[in-house]
Image (cartoon, rainbow, N blue to C red; front, side, top):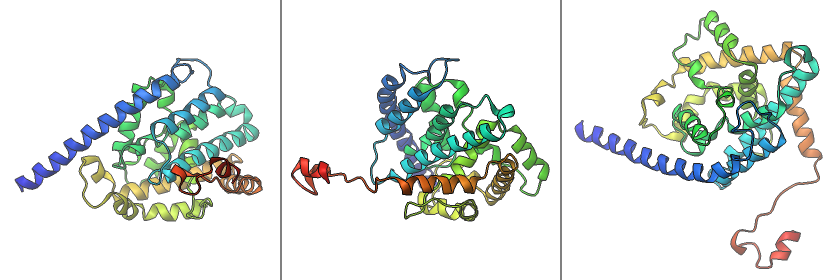
Length: 288
C-alpha cells in the first residue's frame, strides 16, 4: 500500500513540475501578445484587436498538432457559436441585452477550455486555465465570465430548486458560453453535433472521460466526476436550451447557419507540406 501511495505521489509531483514548466513557457510567449491589448487594461473596450490577440495567444502557446487539433477546432467553433447566440439575443431582445459585447463573447469561447492544452484532469484543467490567465494579466472581469463546472458538483439531480438556482446564478455571458461549449462540438467528418446528439454523448461522458484519461485518477478533483454531476448538469443544459429558445434564440438554426456558411465557402481544404513530405518544390506546394 505504501509503495502504491509513493508511486502516485511521485506521479503527481512529476505532473505538477511538467505543468509549471509548460505554463512558464506559455506565459513567456503570451505576455508580449497581450501587452498592447485591452484584455489586460481594466475597463477598456474589447474589440476585434483583442479577438485577434486571443487567437494568436492560443496558436502561440499550443501550435496545432495531431494531438490537439480537435481541441483547436472546438475552441474556434465555440467562439463562433457564442457570437451567433449574442447576435440573435441583440436582434430578438435588444432592450435586455444591449450590453452584450460580441467580441468579448468570442474571446470567452476561445479561452474557456484553455487549460485542456495542459491537462485533461477534470477540474484541474479549469484551475490551470485560471492560473494561466491571471499570470498573463487577463482582466478579472473577463475571467469571471468563463463558466466553471464546479457549479454542478455536489448537487442533487432530482432537485428542481437546485437546478433553477444554478440557472439563476449564471450570468448571461456564462449561459451563452455554456451553450456554445455544448453546441460547439464537431463530428468525426467535420460536421456539427445537434443538441440532442450532444446530450446523448453527455449522458455517457463519464465512460468517455475514462477512456480518454485512463482509469487511474491522480487528483482528488477527478473523483468528483460522478453520475450525479453528469445527470444534474444535463438537466441544467436542457433548461438552458429552453431558456434561449424562449428568447427567440434557436440553437439548431444557428448550427444549420454555420454549416451553410462553411459549405458555401470556396475553401475546401488546406494542404500543409511539413518538411517537404509531399513535395520538395515549395512553389508547387503553395499552388496546391
